[in-house]
Length: 175
Image (cartoon, rainbow, N blue to C red; front, side, top):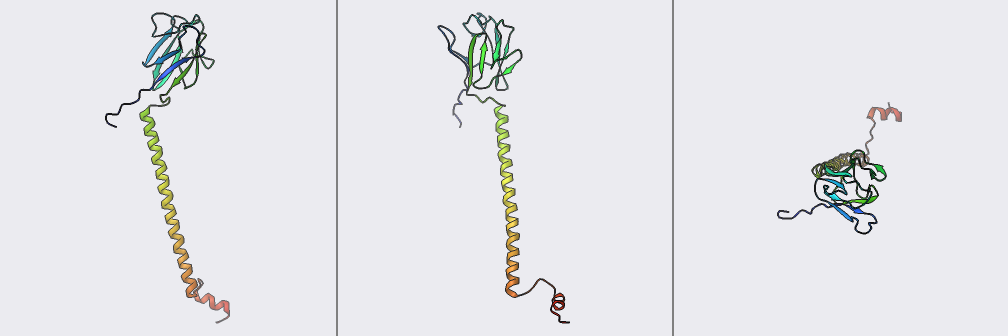
């Protein structure tokens, strides 16, 4: 593991049916972006329906989010207007005006990876604890059952009954 390079996580917005010189892929490798058709934005989308400063994207807690910046034609995530920050999920359609994209990410879109590994480790340990308790209960029940069966076989072999001797004499009529 030492000296092993970590694979860089890749996130992008892929254009749906791009035409001519339209943007085909927007690679997301910085924590924040402004998107639009103007020269001052980081992600330029060449489409007449995209405002100069159309939307903002940010990486927050390992998840990409988008919000509209008061554009004329709106920003939508799966046909839901992004007037507030909307968290993107892998495969969702994102529309900036008439420019349509699909959000793709090979990064884990969920909680913090450190927390995830802690949670998965804790879950595995709780499963291990349950297995150990099950084995211990089985052993106790097994030993108890074995002891009872040995006692019964001993009693049967020696011909002893479990009733006291006085009770046996009253039943048989011997007084």
